[in-house]
Length: 151
Image (cartoon, rainbow, N blue to C red; front, side, top):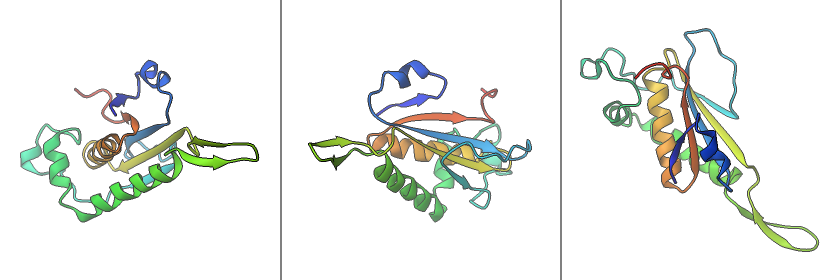
């Protein structure tokens, strides 16, 4: 399934299956409000900030994501997100008194990843999880709050 930019609502509206929203954000701007169903604080993961080879990059760059994947906790978080998606939005048979139909428990699921700046760890984790969910067949909407103005 493709990863859709969160701003492309027409592509999301055309989907007849559940969508998973994946967000990245920083806490440096003082906004700690939770706007997703599941929020992961990834401050303590391996931090690419200050690494000379990543000068001028963000968590959207594959090199940063590959470097971050060395931390074994990244695979654990990714597996948890896949498990939650399988449990909450994967269609399952549901029986009522007259018939059995296959439908998901929910039509929307959202994950947020938060670090201090919102430019390296959180976007890298959001990208990693979004790609894993997409590879598993889910429709994913991806939004980086702190990177929306960066090119």
